[in-house]
Image 1 (cartoon, one colour):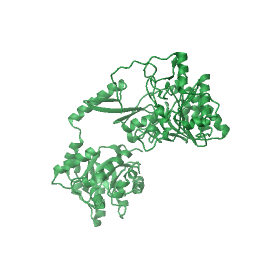
Image 2: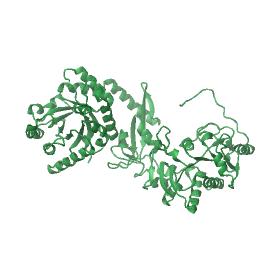
Image 3: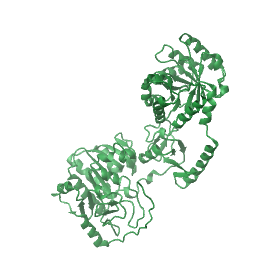
Image 4: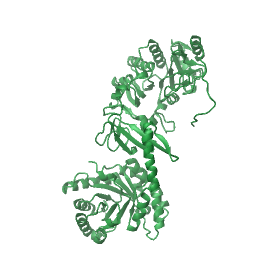
Length: 609
């Protein structure tokens, strides 16, 4: 079960010696968010039993008026910790704090004991949460594993005193010695979707220093701070409470969100500050924001491009028409990147996924170009067992996949992986056992959506697919990519975005990325698009530079980029209608005439670097 208290407000967590009734009888009057009833360091070895008795009595009899009651047990290397847990759970505590946590195994061990104590003392399953104190270099290095060790774990906390001893240094008051651990713990907590709390500040005579320390950890991203004195509470709450100007600004943002959402705008400014919000339509989602492209009534397959939005947007809103129980795993987008979940009646119509260019073709001209493409591919040195392949969604490109599959079967050649936006013919290769794996970034028909359920059909993010700034990208492992284009010029530059009048009519997708990464980039384009030459002197706009394009296949012949002397040599004895790109341009102009150049203004509308 999911404990609703896991995400509660915890700005302050005040330490109290559980052995001293005078300290633990009424700390709620100071209004801390949580109290830490300590059975460990504050209690002498010969007073452990007495402290447990005091703790049990307090938990049973005192109304803490909404304060969370956390019990710090003794270390797992001591003989006391199991009885500490049983006493705390029996008394009715809200949470258990594990000291000196150094591994996920420590969390597993405590979780098991807590679950047994819940059962023994009639507490609801999952009602007692866990937090882990990180007190060593080893614990800091394993912080993410610790954060992800249990569904019960609501957060981690830094214990600065023991940590600095382990580092062979000491607390200076500047925070310099804690900087690395603080940053590492916050990052781990955010990655795992749990809370993070800072260490205590022990110099009670320096409240200005304490304020500066709290301001620092607030800016670093901590959810709250451990404290040792009631005088520290108001300072922490003041820093962590939004100011009136922040509230007014937030209200403006909410109003702007409603207005801009209606206009289909996700990025805008308020009072000069950029507000970046990603609204992600997801076929299924759980209450924590784990999103998937399958399993609902509006399945789209994968959410690869939305993954980047979720990763980089300031605010992420998942919109779904199918709420499912937690956990919605495997999640295409993790709950760690989602801020809000909104349920609506309908997010879209999956029956309209397969439209336009993604449909198979019966056009004899396109089928001929597809056959040319297949013959070219199988005569290159790259066509062999284990080759990799991507095709676009144009009619000729889809037909080339069907044609290639027949040759693969005849020759016993197997594909290692297919990648990109997928359609039924690519997925059929998986069904027929002709490809080891499909790496999916987008699904263009319902057969591809259904194929996502196959164990060898893998979703990848747009970044994994083609981000040139990654340490690795799938497109750089391609042997072949089969692409389409609206225009190709005599320098092999391609335009896939605008028509001959300069109007935007399409999107480039992975066109330039795959062409740059593949060993052999083939562009299929008819000589004429309607009555307009597709092969021309200069394209209206360059989407993919000619240096990345190796072959252009048309219904009037095939041109190999002169840069690719190896391909020209490989095709010397192949019976295909090879010619030059200039000759294809001349034929197009002879049939349809040379098109007028688009009139361009002098004003630069947008420059992207």
